[in-house]
Amino acid sequence: ETETEDTELSVPAGFYDNYGWAELPPHIQDAATTLGYSQTIWDTGGYSWAEDTFWDELTLEQKEAGALLGYDKYSWDGIDPITGDAVLDDDFVSYDDDYVFSFQVGSSDVWVSQYQILYFVAASSFLLVGVLDLIRERHMYHILMIIAGASGVVSAIFIEQNIRVSNIVSSISVHFYLMEALTLFGEHKRYAVTEDSGKWMARSIMIGDATWVLGSLLDVILSYFYLLDDTSDWDVSLVVLAIIAA
Image (cartoon, rainbow, N blue to C red):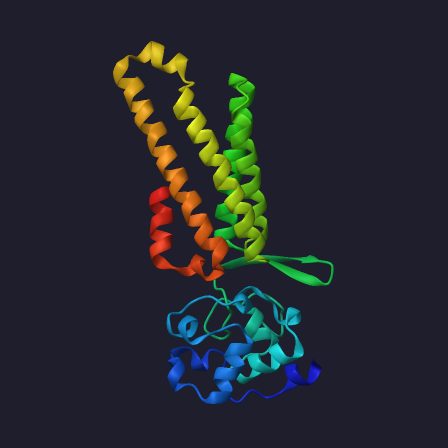
């Protein structure tokens, strides 16, 4: 392990990123394959499990493959070798560039990204809304929102450390969102609003509830793409659909 970290690298980190798979030397293709890349993933800018793995979590064979691609512990993890701080400029190349800070858990550093923070805040907001609605209206179906929000929080916690676990919990979350959306649309619980505001408000609320059902249904469908293929998180067309669903 030490030998691999101390080896002088023949190319800089990210040197081969601008080459197509067919242009890579055979030994570099083998190294990329060891790190979870295939020709399709490489040529389309797809996702490999290695991008969510810290250097110290790699096996010796995987570190040797990373070294062939120009990486060492510091450039792979995106940290300054002197200060140990995250480096987000061109001096070092990290497998992710939106990390904000890290904290120590045992002997490992846990990194937190901007996306993870936004995801956590959004899921926490749904959780809070579910709790407040349950207290205010005392309708038990709000528990569905609470479970969905709590699952989203768990998914956000794992999204940078274990994308597979994150996708599984996220799928559970969107199923509960769909269940609440269907319950709300089917039973139309907002009597206090509809009785006082007239037919136009009732229809507007019903349209809103219907779009919630459709958006939640689309989220559920997308969740199966993510479950069946972790690289789907980087599929632009699926990202667009996820934005529409939101």
